[in-house]
Image 1: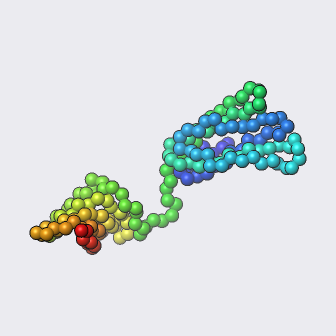
Image 2: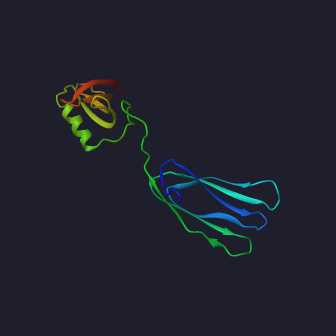
Image 3: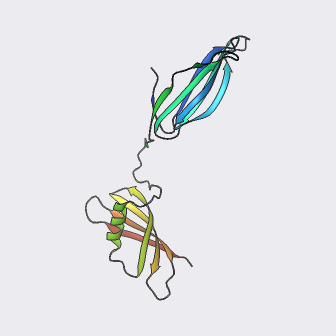
Length: 185
C-alpha cells in the first residue's frame, strides 16, 4: 500500500519500468494541486542492450490540499494507455522541534494584537504610535514586538520608527518592556 499523506516540503519518487526493446515510455500528463516535478531521469538497470529501464520522477509538495499526478504509457505509432490518477493529501508543515523562545517572523496585526497594543500604550504621552506588524515569542508567557511609526506631539514633529516590546505574563497584566526608536527625516 502506498503512502498518500504528506507534509508541505516532502519529496516523493515515482518509478516506472519498461523493457528498452519494447519502445514504451512514460510521460507525465497530469499534475494538479500543490505538487511540482523537480527531476525526471532514466536509469538502465544494467548496461546490456534490451535490458529493463526505469524512469524516475521526483515531485515536491509545495502547498496544502490535494495533489494529483497522472502518467500515460505509450509506444510511438501505438495506442496510449492512461494510468489511474494518483491522489495525495498534503498537510501544512508543522515544526517538529521546540520553538519556545524563538521570535516569529513579523506578520500583519490581528484584531487581538491591535487591542493589546492599544490597551498598553493608552497612558503613553508625547507621541502617537501606529503599529504596522508584530513578531511573537513564547517564553514566560507571550512577548510581542510591534513595529510602529510614530509622530512626536511637539511643534516640530518628525516621523519616527519604533519597536515596542510588550510582555503578557502567564499571570498578571501586560506591560511595556522596552521602546526603541529612531527619528526619520
